[in-house]
Image (cartoon, rainbow, N blue to C red; front, side, top):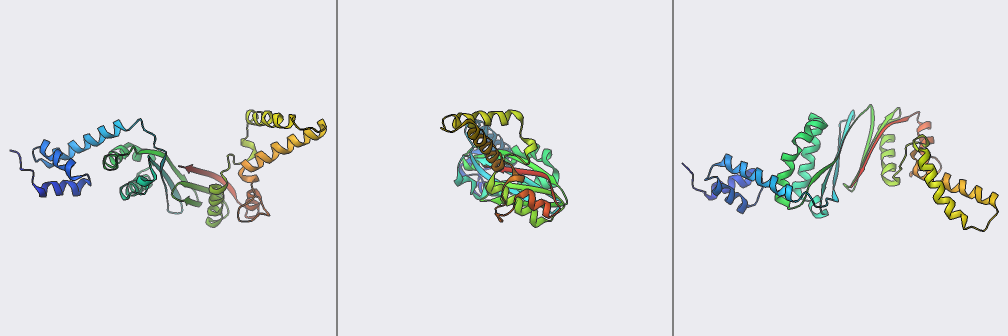
Length: 259
């Protein structure tokens, strides 16, 4: 026997889901007042809505980092607009997902993420999707989140948390593409050489001078892109490499994600 769809029932379903009054009323009417069925209908509806929005671009969003000093997790969640990225439901969602990674691990969270994300898609009307999910373990960890849009985790061997955080802040600001020169492949070097050769070909200088200019340009370019060669943002007199050496520290791992 079906129940009457009362205001109390609608309020109960709305309190449980956060979804609009009209959607709750429609679900309860379809379920003939059965709360469990109504919840199942809303879940299916939110999944259908998520599917319809799948083709949209989710270029905005938020980055969250949680740590206990021995483990840091980074979660990025994408949406379509900055407005939704600041929405309370969206902020709570990324907090829940981050907490779940911290407690249950990356794979377990990914398995359960859709059921948490779909109702928020239904509420906000925007495409929402998971971005980067990372877990870093270590004895010396430093984290930095800038404007909720860029997140960096640095794991050091040696040094201390303050140093690791300073380097995380530096990475946020300077956006290095390589940790050390060893990571730069011959293919990348050759590509940049070709680009700079075209620039220098137009310069009216002797070949010997042009050769020195070319090497200088290549060296400067990769110095600016390589973390260990970059000048530390807090001290213009030393590079990150020198800073680490001074503190008898080495970088074990870096995770950086930008929305």
